[in-house]
Length: 85
Image (cartoon, rainbow, N blue to C red):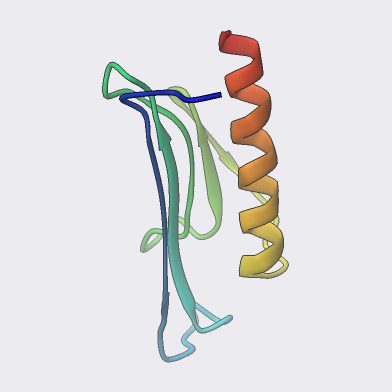
């Protein structure tokens, strides 16, 4: 199903491993609705560690690998889209 006006953006960068980014990766995955509101997001912003945005809520999340996180994000976007139709 086409969802015109929505944005799905997946970004990941290799970084030097550090206490803040021990896995050596910085990432941002976001699903934005037609009205420009973030519906779902995952990132590891400075000082916050791995976390999930679901609407206005921010929740900690487990990180295993970027591949696993991308798969989880893709599944959640599909589920949210089904609920909105």
